[in-house]
Image (cartoon, rainbow, N blue to C red; front, side, top):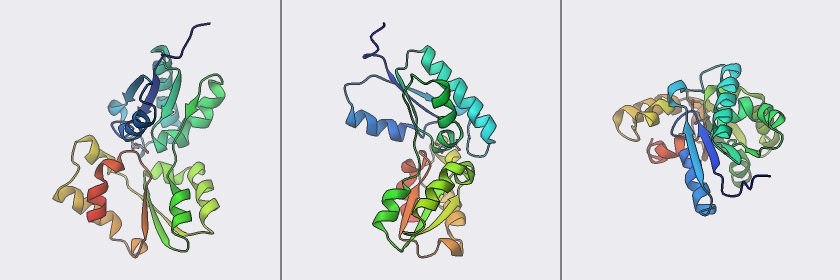
Length: 200
Ligand code: DGL
């Protein structure tokens, strides 16, 4: 059997967003080797259909396996919702790690308060998120905020400035978002614009 210990852990996302997850992994496991796959050609994922995202993610995982990945981190909330379960069934020997919006710590730290969950339209519409939300609704008032069009700013390298602030203001100015105590960044692209989100 081939010793896979030195093979890379692969990270994938629809674009640059998953680098925010990879950064944390490198801090925790600096001795590992990594490869990163950003599918910018087919981005955004969050406004596609579930079937399309599943197919794209499957293709990406196959590519990463052919490049020696010993484990795959789907560093994308959208692709995790669409494909993680399916791919775990298909590749039973391969560790596949997914991500989900950090609703648990947000709800447990902000009991009875209002929490916004910013994520792609697909993540928020999927069963995975709705099951997660149902589990924490007794702790806090959870408001899903679909942010179609937001990841495109990050892909274009726009992390601050007037255009982004105006875009965010339109999303967050709704009555429903008023008086929120916490915001969950439910898309791996959003940590890169965290400061601008806080400002708005
Ligand atoms: N970074 C991805 C996520 O975490 C989504 C961005 C996209 O719409 O492609 O959901």
